[in-house]
Amino acid sequence: MSEKVTSKKRQKRESLLRQSFQLFTEKGFQNTSISDIAKNAGVAKGTFYLYFKDKYDLRNRLTIHEASKLFINAYNAFINEHSPDSDENHAPLDVEKIIVFMMEHILDELESNKPLLVFLNKNLSWGVFRNAIYGEPKEDEPDFYYLYRNILEESPVKYRDPEIALFLIVELVGAAGYSSIIYKDPLDLEHLKPYLIREIHNILKSHEII
Image 1 (tube, rainbow, N blue to C red):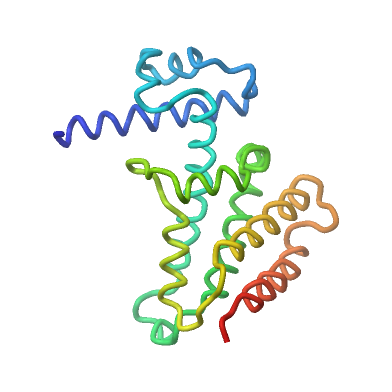
Image 2 (cartoon, rainbow, N blue to C red):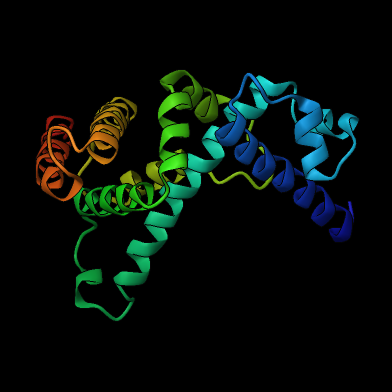
């Protein structure tokens, strides 16, 4: 397949994802049709089915796509902040430090983008997450679980049941972060972060292989 054709396919898929997110957050999932999505994306309705099985498949892929972007953007921010010339880069990889940085970065992004926060809180279930881990990889799909595995593999500290550890961290940060950002309950985000950091430490510590 030529690079030009591949680029056009990627643009159409990105347009479908982008327009579906806008429609889902403005009109709601139930009130949005496939015809609406295709029309807003500037493609024929039949083109939709070249990329997604149905509206539910699109919603699941969109959920993972947006969550993955958050995760990978946070990791890239960590890398950018810790330059290759920094002395700390010669120290053993600190998984906890990376995850805590990413957690804070993701929560800050979600605080500034509440429609995305609400969308993910409503749709990012562990079942959707597991399907993204074990399902067929999608072209040009950011893969945050692959990145997570690489971080663990490079760490001198080894962890048992890393999927369970990630599940606990995602559930903790997702639920507590949503309540804090939307309702400022029981604390606003800045005052909640130290508690989340402590709990992330406890989760990772409990999964260390001694």
